[in-house]
Length: 160
Image 1 (cartoon, helix red, strand yellow):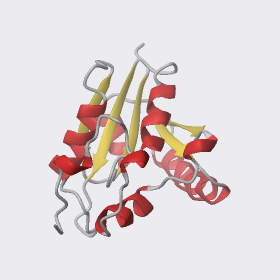
Image 2 (cartoon, rainbow, N blue to C red):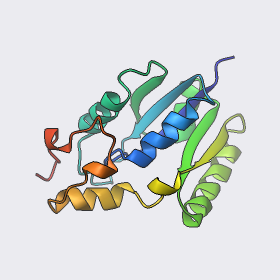
Image 3 (cartoon, one colour):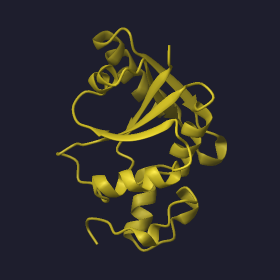
């Protein structure tokens, strides 16, 4: 049976930390679906299509990576896509507590789906999308925090 994992998030923007988790997880799974969540209540900096395009560019030579979008419950997306694993990255103890609570609720709703947590490598542990987004919004150079395949100058934020 094919081992399929879903790596959900808003990815606004996609960071080196996200990339690192996914590249390391490729040794564990046959296929990883990067699921860009649609949340009408959340104000994103980059459009959904821009975020998907950025991520697709990073993994354009990796056929085991699929970039998709979803709305609603993550476990429903997993079930609908035949994924038995939910992949999440952990940077801090606070991340662990937050992800543990979500993982337990997901397990109660969908007992057949396992949450798999990977620790971020130390050099990526301080990187998060909110900080990177703030750097970009304020005209700073955030290039060292996003994958090399993403040239931030090629993308305009919704607020630009």
